[in-house]
Amino acid sequence: MTGADISLLTTSVARRRSARRLARRKKTVVLAALIALIVIFAFLSLTLGKASVSVSEVFATMIGQGTAMTELVVLELRLPRILTAIVVGACLGMSGSVFQSTLRNPLASPDIIGITASASVVGVVCIVSFGMSGYVLTLTVIVGTLLAAVLMYVLAWREGLNAFRLVLVGIGVGAFCAGFVSFILSRSDIRDAQTALVWVTGSLSGSSWQALWPMTACAVIIVGLVAMLSRPARILALGDDTAAGLGIPVEKIRLATLGCAVALAAIAVSTVGPLAFVALAAGQISRRLLRSGSSSVATAACVGGALLLGADIIAQHALPSTPLPTGVVTGLVGAPFLIWLLVRASRTGNESGQ
Image 1 (cartoon, rainbow, N blue to C red):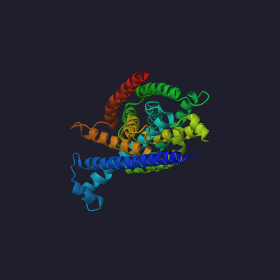
Image 2: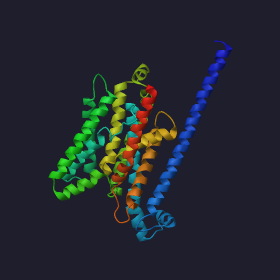
Image 3: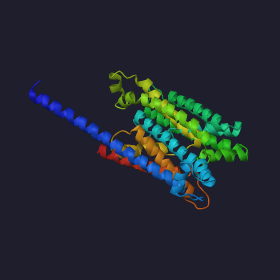
Image 4: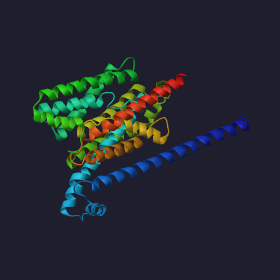
């Protein structure tokens, strides 16, 4: 190797290291900005409402010097709802990011491919037919959703997992589940149907400390598994042939990562019901904030938490008399976002075809 070759190789390595440092710095800045946005939204949610609480009263309550009224409003009513929104949004954001990177499809998310719809069926059946609630409902929805995901995985299998086929199977399953939920609600007792309908719409109104802790514990376990799978998952995102050439067991890693994504979505849905488009939007927004071809799971988690917390603030205060279910706001905002993504993808495809 000549001196010129060594110099060229050294320059190339230096450029790659510089690019990595720049990417890490950008990711750190984006994460810091998103965390700051979540904190701002949290304080807005703590202070706004019929029982107005000032920022100073919030701080006094946090350190145990608040009045009985502020302790009730801040610690028992608003804070559990805020933390639930952050954790649920983070779970959905991570789930969407993992789906999109593993399937290499920017439109893949648990609500698009039928995961949340499957969870809705399990939840409605449990509420209407068995009167389940609390921990039992949460665990049953998680297990039922995982079983539905396994069924979709089997249906999409053809000499390996076909990502496009999985999306089509998921869309079909989602349509079937939507019709099945409507059928169950139409045939059930009016009071049970009303309870189930609030859950199906997606609402944070039932948030409590009792529901928050087990959900957070389950989420932490799954996030740990996602972190363990992060390195082989990044290699898998380069393509099946490349990953196999580097010694990665492609189907096992894909199944494990998709299982984690399904579990995260199931944890979120079992707690507050299906919330449309949060998972889809979080991965897309994360990718655009980082200006890279892939989304960071941590960034997507922060985006999801900020999105859901912001949507909940709008849902509570958009109408002066009656608060809206949070799922209504995410659906109204998310549907145009999906249409924009489809139009953008179509234009990009046409331009590349030309």
